[in-house]
Image (cartoon, rainbow, N blue to C red):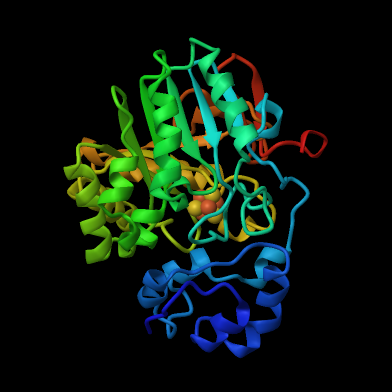
Length: 353
Ligand code: SF4
């Protein structure tokens, strides 16, 4: 089926055949708590007859989201602890996140910022807050890279994006501007010449990190949107979340990584799913994830190998989940060494959660 606009209510999802009547009440309870949006491109991609459709699983609300485990947390990667001014997350010395908007074209059921994004979320930065965020970056010469994330920054109009990029272009020590977005696959028509032009900052290098989790997301329209970005001279890298029931399969992962490379998107990060509330049904154990990633070695070209990353709960930064910094401890627990040399247990103990 083709929808004229994004579906944002359970009634619309039921009508489109994406939520069976028997699951309506559960989905409605989820939608009362977390944002819902499925774009027309995704509606067309989902097979309503397949109860295990990997695209539906990512976007259609499910009653399993109502179960929150004790170790899950509203701010799983600790953004707030590293937010010196509104809209900025400064966790590492040489880079900051700039969260200009907390709205997305779709709402992923496993989202690690699900308590912050959505129509009821933190919204768009006010003009004053944006001024303060830009001033924070301008005052810190160590900041080499600015990562626009959110929310999905590509939902902003080209005019607003261009205004932000012009201000970043005027900061000499900022050399790299990176966008994190799902738009090229979930709303490819949005990627037009005006949007692409707005992503460039004079004298800076722009990277676009494309978030995609299953090879089916690469429709002809999505591939064309990606080609428009790369042809315009922007560099594309990938990010994927390892998700039970979506891509926790060596053949699917290999296909996905090859599809990125074939579309001139260099595989960058494969994220272990975060401890976001109501997402336990998506989470593999770290041991399972490590075994899957190990199975990619030798199976696919080195070009297709992403870094397998775990964001250490509590805001301690990222660790390579398949490296010596992650050591198996007792009872299925792992000891993680963060970039500051401190050790953390994963999953975290209750008193750390
Ligand atoms: S696009 Fe990103 S920020 Fe938005 S819901 Fe999906 S994972 Fe969350």
